[in-house]
Image (cartoon, rainbow, N blue to C red; front, side, top):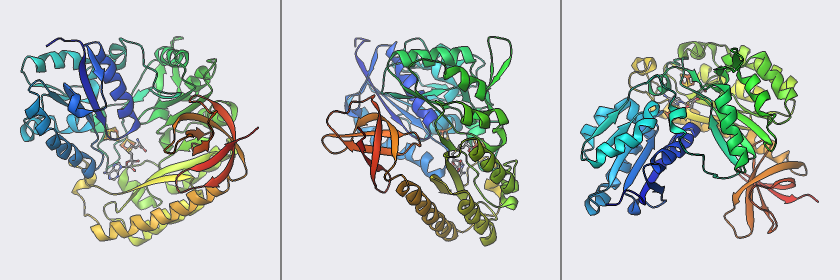
Length: 442
Ligand code: SAH
Ligand code: SF4
Ligand code: F3S
């Protein structure tokens, strides 16, 4: 079969970094002659970019793979690859459990994908879950980034050294590593030249960023943000996910100083109980987090905060959970993600006394109710206000266009004159469950 014109279908699970990685893998395999398709039945190669964060996320991979059995029977040339954090954590296991898999590639080995693909074509099984020393992204960046819309992700930092007792990320992504600022700036410029107007800097602990600057100095995230904000045509900057322990004074100040830095911050705390925070190995107390929130709000009073919470962490009592509810009430989140604790093999907390599933479900429901009330209140308060919206895609209904406000609210308008990539002033007229409705302000 001709090497060119082969079709690649990629399915992405998990966090935004996986979204970024999937795009890079499409580009890497583009060099090997692949073009992307949205239909698995047309594909010559299917790649699942997987997530290992909770048990359910990991199980999805196996059920998804089962669905591709029929396709492989129909097309003997079809190759199936598993990438991402499940590949890293369970590489050999996947090959054993699911013989249809040809390629297993961990997150630090994506630049080796074209060579692995060639091996798979020769009928070999290819597994790579090493943590090589070379800069994966630099080797991956052998073709320009394709324009995928006015808002783009850009990975600047990867890996985690924090070892929270519940979390697989330090094992699946490896140690903290930062890309040099010069490369980040070059990639940002390329994005802006292609029409991108908003960039979200990504890292598992993005505010632990410390890149080797061209001036032989170590650049923290705040300095990188100031440098990126000088790029003409780049209108908005965001970053995620940040850890409370790495929220330095310079970064907090940047929220007050840098106009392009949007007033939204995802700052996970996981629990409001000091006892649980300690057992989680988070490295801070609830009061320290609250104090941080105060300082951030002082620098940028209209900032909207979001967080992540885990309920039913081993040994969490009703009082501990109440402390989480109290913290949520005190902070007032614009948005929050809450999860039932999921025991992950190989992490310290998996070995401890577990909380009953019913108790976890009950706590999750209570927390989500509280968060929903806060989210509704914040959204409702936007009605009548004018916000800037960067339009990203058509909405579900004809004539509808959807974008994001400065505060990361999804906003839709019914206006045939609005184009993708427009950054427009919009008056909010209504609040729905997960979005706002607006009209272009004239
Ligand atoms: N680096 C980020 C989190 C990445 S994982 C940070 O430190 O905040 C995203 C979220 O998944 C976490 O914030 C946590 O709330 C949740 N999570 C991680 N491991 C989990 C587990 N074992 N069970 C349930 N939720 C988990
Ligand atoms: Fe996981 Fe904790 Fe690292 Fe976040 S900081 S990725 S929760 S170990
Ligand atoms: Fe999942 Fe890996 Fe991201 S475990 S959340 S895909 S870092």
